[in-house]
Image (cartoon, rainbow, N blue to C red; front, side, top):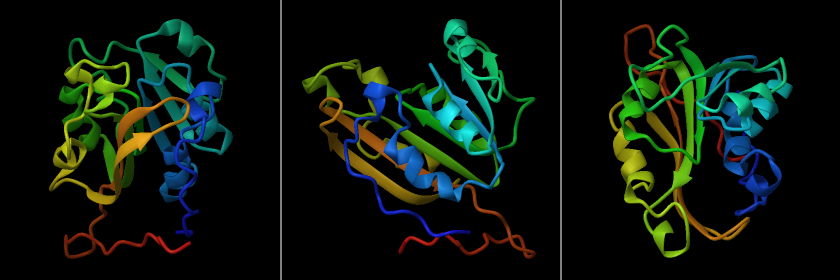
Length: 200
């Protein structure tokens, strides 16, 4: 697996102009080349587009059919209300990566972890407690508690990187973000040693 690029400049103005999150860009080298990627609650699909352009087989899921209709043919789409009824993607797993940004519905976490193939990567980035002091969202239902992302994957995934802090661009916001991997097993059934180069 190739070495990773350095961390992008914090607070790059990605959301304002539809560019992918620097956090997603940073960890894309961990994804299996040409692998299957789920972009959950993808909205207008800034990540789905970007990943499809790089040869990944992307499924974009959102409840907004009009937003999905604007995605290019290279992105498969499924319209679904992720907060009502049963998990709608049981027939699609496993995925080599699951991408979630600016979205939080805690009951989905077990499904997201189960949807990852061995070696699969979870890249998650959304608003955190403290954001209520600077703007929306301010409802605690949509704000991660301190360490909550870590707790959600504990004993299931290997955490490669985790951050909890404040960004200033495109606007001030409190965020948590994480990259974690479902480790593949070796011949003895133990977790294979990591092969992620972090030194550039």
